[in-house]
Image 1 (cartoon, helix red, strand yellow):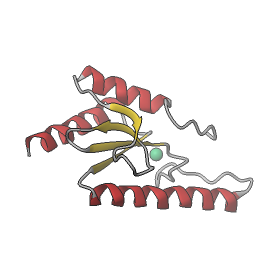
Image 2 (tube, protein in one colour):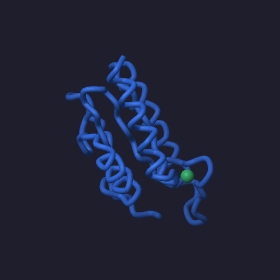
Image 3 (cartoon, helix red, strand yellow):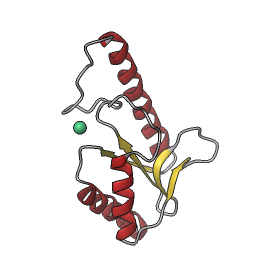
Length: 126
Ligand SMILES: [Zn+2]
């Protein structure tokens, strides 16, 4: 739970596999906007969709976040900081015409892939 690997986590790989299987192509772990030092896990450039796969612990999932007993104030501040940063990143992307999409690690990867591909298709046709 506390291993904070920035990329290639299990839920992220499962989502990428499902997206790839449905024919979508994307960039991985890259900056949606050149010059903005924020990365997204999966980026659909032409449709301007940036997908963030959020770990339930690190991003403070409302259903699954449980504060560790040791150093609780430290973790609360850490996770709160992550949430603030997430919200800020989403705001910056929206302001630049991008659509941020959050997929939680607890979501079924196939269903999440379906949701993302629908969003990408809708963005392409509009
Ligand atoms: Zn969760």
